[in-house]
Image (cartoon, rainbow, N blue to C red; front, side):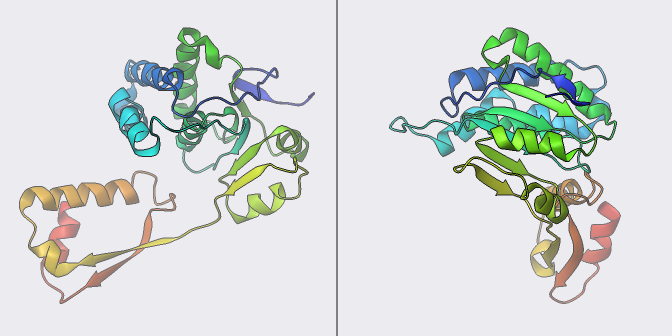
Length: 252
């Protein structure tokens, strides 16, 4: 299709092949990607990249495989997955892509048009991993283009499933496009979160577990500048107010 599409990974010769979920090839590919990303000299500057490489490590993928599969499973992916990822979180597209691979699908992923350094670094690590795992040569296509309904409509018409992360407005636009009769849509609409903290329980935490609570709250709230759907916009303190609230904010 003729358009102003920038292929960050892959090209217009994309595959629609389905394969076994959590296949050995996929697990090896993600492990290689993790190693490649870890070799980036600037990775310590980007906590989200460090978290992504940690998530893709071999041990974690094997853990996920045990949770979601068993030796008696006879499964295969749907085919071609088309992902429209949000513009507010640089690494979201990678997680969406990797879930597409782990579930046995070839993928076309539209990344944000914003110039995030993280996207370029992730794509470079993916390209290196593909060179070592040629099975994925036409099964991973990462594209970048400004809003252009014709392009998204074209990819939608070829997709066996679509993952739309852009919120209510994007979902309404994408739903207009004609798809195959059996195309599966996974739509991630606008969501807002709030947090409830039990003051009594928090007061009884030792220093180690109190610090771990703060770390987890920080990751949920500040790592994506409150843009993730899991980022709380409101805190509800449950119980009698004590100085532990001040301790919480100072520690945070």
